[in-house]
Length: 317
Image (cartoon, rainbow, N blue to C red):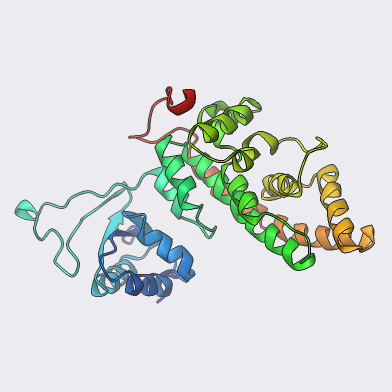
């Protein structure tokens, strides 16, 4: 039962949001129901069950929302319908709305902009440790959205490289972690989310190191903006490419360095490698408008309940 119907603009009921409040003990069943409702894969649905309360369907007709809630409750979950304004009534799994609350009072479920940035959209979820870090530092929602977009493109890019050059050794974990955290310093230098600046680079690396991240993984926060250093690795290049092409930007100098590495590994003619990489990046860039819409849908400012400023923490952050 995928929710695909559009809500009309004829003065009818406003569109509704389905909020998964608690997954309950039957997680496998809930994952299966979420897959049917949303059309998403098992990995994404299982990720959602661990991030409750979380919106799982948005802007659907009320009758579809009611059907989705019923399906989730039948599988043992606690789920409710939310409305514009960010609240939902919480009821126990399979119980009437408000049951167990004094005088049937409905408890509001508030879904923050950061929650939405981390869970909405078709992009893959960030690694759990990165999501925890973003929540710990009260990351601006737009930063979380940006990191998800770059991480998702990096996943595609690493897989393409693996298929094109199976013998080329690439540290996939490092690339994906680097893509997921490359701009973490902008949690400290928020102005650089909407304007120029490179202060976030060194600050991001220091922030990650202070929280126990290994140097080989923390380095991307400082290296993603430059690729001319002689010590730059293939992993650094892939993170930098993902950080550009997600929004449709193509940087010839950067892509040429990737072509050189691939040509050296495969023995193919450089022009052959160029055509292959260029075609793949064209496909990725074709979806840039959708990604940009997702990116700009989230505010730069931190939501209510997030730290107003990131004061000193471990290692001075």
